[in-house]
Structure formats: C-alpha cells, structure tokens
Length: 67
Image (cartoon, rainbow, N blue to C red; front, side, top):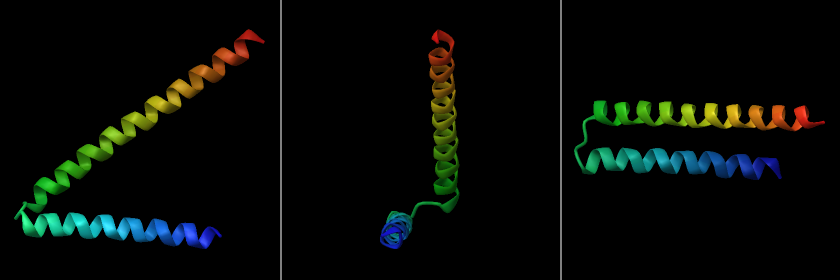
C-alpha cells in the first residue's frame, strides 16, 4: 500500500512541474523570475514550519510544567 501512495506523490510532483513548465512556456515568463518566486516560497514555508515547531515546543513545555 505504501508504493501506491509514493507513486501518487511522484505523479503529483511531476504534474506540478509540468504545469509550471507550461506556464513558463505559454506566458513567456523569465526563468529567473520563476526561480526567485520559488526561493521566496521556500523561505516562507521554512518560516511557517519553524513557527509550528516553536509553538509545538511551547505547548509541550506548558503541558509538562503543569504536572
């Protein structure tokens, strides 16, 4: 069952990459702009993940402190 999930994930990633490539080609987007947007989105994602870990650690600390 894990293979099917992995296969669908790979298919989704390939479909996303194909959509981005089609958008770059059809709208004549500069690849540099697309790369800068990708880097910006990855930085924002990293900030969100770091904030989630921070809030999770804070909640864990608050739960342990009351006991």
